[in-house]
Image 1 (tube, one colour):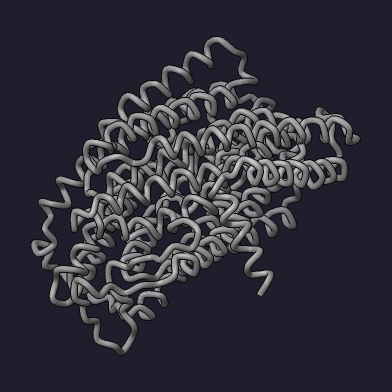
Image 2: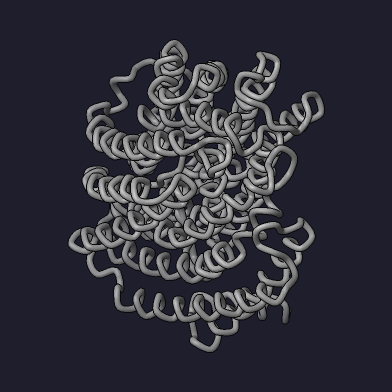
Length: 580
């Protein structure tokens, strides 16, 4: 239900640590090298600090997504926000879409609950099962990557058929180099699942940094060799294509290799096993079949976005690269807050659901919903009120022009509406996976994506091409809200009451605090120097720093006055630590 064109490797392990430093109950003890793993009796469960897990993941996600921003900044600076940048975005989207459609949903959403159960039930704590799974995944991903590369011209015709020959040729050339990314992305996703079920969350959060550093270096080299200037698709020779496309592939390969040492650290030894019949492929097929439905519907929705934005793009309007830059900006906030929570929570909810402790599942859902809403709300306000200075400070470098920055700010302003609904809808979706139930999210996704597509097509027809990317984001926001409401309604019969009254009271206070912060932010930005249509970098930076501080301070003050528990508890914890 994301609506994003491509995401970092972090985007799949969406998850949440328990709120305010509550104790994290692990489904199994950590498997340390050289130590025989012994399953604890039912009444003795290994406990680790949720605060420690959350801190490691939040810091890793922050650094990862921070370097990811620099990465996308460098891509924009090297290629610009016009046709070449859009062609690059289309090409990098193709491997991610093929991966998502064929294996991505199964690897990340189906297998974690299965691996948790195998860790609890198998005599070897799921070691052989994980080895068979990795072997099968490597073979399947390699075959899919090869087939996708052969079909690259067909994929280009589907997504860029309305453009001229030079544009299509550039997308195809980049795709030959980028489609192998789906192999490395799939392997890294499965390794991350194995690590998460063994209580190791740090490496999957930190490994994408290696990818980002490589691509940042490649873009820097591209600028040094070819200059930071706008060129037409027909001017992109094979030397440029090999550097930017091959460098992007290298980044994903390095990221995958960076996860391998963590497998040994948790005591896992990767041994090739070809007795795939012992995997219980029937169960995986049953769960995975609904994931194919879920992901397939999403891909149809993304197909609409790509084609509409490709039609609207003429070098001046916000196109695929700008749309995706804004979406990744949302994912940065979502990843730092919600991804850290859900990644830690997924094994915990899976274990609780397996033992029919549904009250624990609902408690986590209620606290998680309140926390992600309270913490993400001021970030959404900053995105909306400070859209113009953010666009200039973050993206306007090199070939990414001032006009591109103005177009970006409009898209970001609208996209801010969807930040909190997206995080909440993801939390509820992963609660179904923990049950485990992939059927319900797949069925929910059908009307949600249908609603999104209808809104996006309608907005595209009603408004001009300049509003096309913003219209896509508005359709996303409405569909995220619909997904959250429908999922909450369907979860209640399965797990019981999720504390809707408490959630709505918290959300009401959050809305009041957010509106107050937004009003103060608008007033502060209005008195600061700088024309929104032609902001200099310095004026944008001043607006961003002062406006952001005003919004943050106002929201925090109102949260304390309104007694938003998820905020006051964090403040109290900080005060206690400072007091020590």
